[in-house]
Length: 359
Image 1 (cartoon, helix red, strand yellow):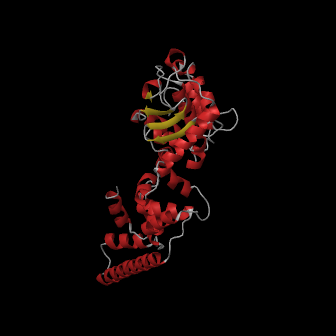
Image 2 (spheres, rainbow, N blue to C red; image 1 turned 90 degrees about the horizontal axis):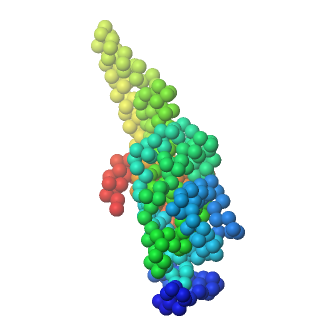
Image 3 (cartoon, rainbow, N blue to C red; image 1 turned 180 degrees about the vertical axis):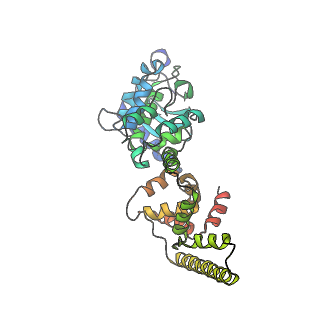
């Protein structure tokens, strides 16, 4: 690298020239199979939604960051963040400066104790995953998830920064641009914040279901009946159980009546088995129709959460959430449709065995 400026700094390169050079470099990386995810913004406002603005606002509150972050605003606005990828506990980026610089930011997982507290405080206040990700909930919930100390956003001590540029500062303008770029990315993919902190956003919704189940006073019997009906497509007759109970407890019932009751019970079981077999055969022959309801029904049939079902199909958990929150027939790639169709042909036992051996 040639240094021709004062103090050993590289010579200034105009933005247009830097962008053209960066575009060529990104094309080369793309041809080599790397997925390039540039950060694109419109106008001077970097983040426009609840999650993006909350991320940027949180970082700007820290004294260690507030004087250094502004250095990266112009970089992210002029498209210098050529690539930004968010994964579990990690942000990887490429920023165009005098040269292309590689940035790696490590984010510590959200502590289990803090995550449990967030779940407990949000229980019963979030209606759906869609509502959660769109930031459409009460001021109380927003206050919980964005709390500076106890919310989802990381503290400075939980963030490790690294850039291969010659700037000696811990937070150079390239890192600052990437941190703002994360806010812009959360505008469109807020679920990435949960991935970054290594927590499952669906747990916030399940917390509400747990509360509702506990307060209703309804036990497992009704749930089991509902699950069996949905699973097999067989209407379970409620009078069957009381008849079995009466046969078991009546001490003075004649032997003849007991025999009749046993035969009827056996006939009922046989009918249910035939219906289940018939339903199963029909399901195998009928091609899988990829709708939001069908995906949700299939996942529940297997008794899996979104992460487990995603692993079984070979997609990401956010993808499964997007499917289930959609409407009508899903527009899927042929490969994804084939994977879903194969999974739909499995029994719950087969699906769970396959999940155990999935990579």
